[in-house]
Image 1 (cartoon, rainbow, N blue to C red):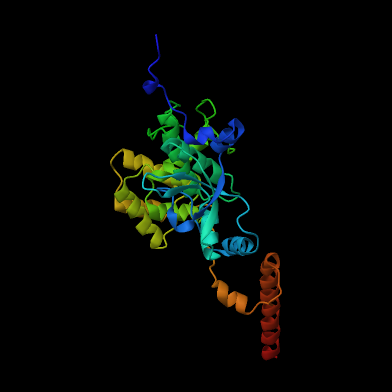
Image 2: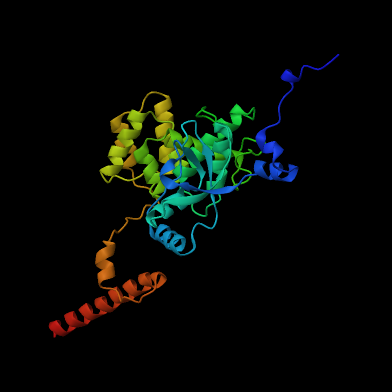
Length: 316
């Protein structure tokens, strides 16, 4: 019986004029230059891109040498691209007035893109608590979509925060030096209002009390913030636990928040704040950063001795 040739699949034109090796190479990822203006940032990217000295140094390096490590992007349906890994390199390239940036283009699902974006950024040396918190949460949700464990995030406010609860090490924390309990604690920070989370980033509130405060309602958290801004003080871990327990019992009021935060802590030492610009204006220009404190202390001691000597002379 003769075959119906009209129904046989025809070879592609490219297949007729390329070798098998060339066709295999065509399937491999290539590095291509893409217009920076055609690359959108990753939605809800949790890592901050800050215009600081480190960024300026990166920009200068790109001016001289170009981008040495290509960024990773994925194609969008509208013909544009979405940045997966390389937001800082993109920003530094813009500062260097570069119009294009070398890119690896990869087809990725939303969950795959989130996992790569989080893992690549968590390799940085300095990560803010807020960055790690939202990054862990995004990765948790992505992994849960892929059928991984979903019990990493626990909303029960009575869970053992100091790690007594024995669990298998979380897949999220294992590559970043964090236990599963620590991963939970960071994810809890996403429940904080932005203003309190900023105080955590600025090291004005430690991680442990911040975790406890995350169980307060938004209204209660803003009341705590008001007390902090009134220069009462930031809560200790013990005070934050008391605030959380009163909140769970529906007994937390503004008066109780003020009473708790106004208590003197046993180890509380008043902080002295200085205007950094005023201090630097009177320092030697070539002084090393690590020697500034010793210089200031020695200067004060010398001045104190001078005043005492002057008082002794006046008393004669």
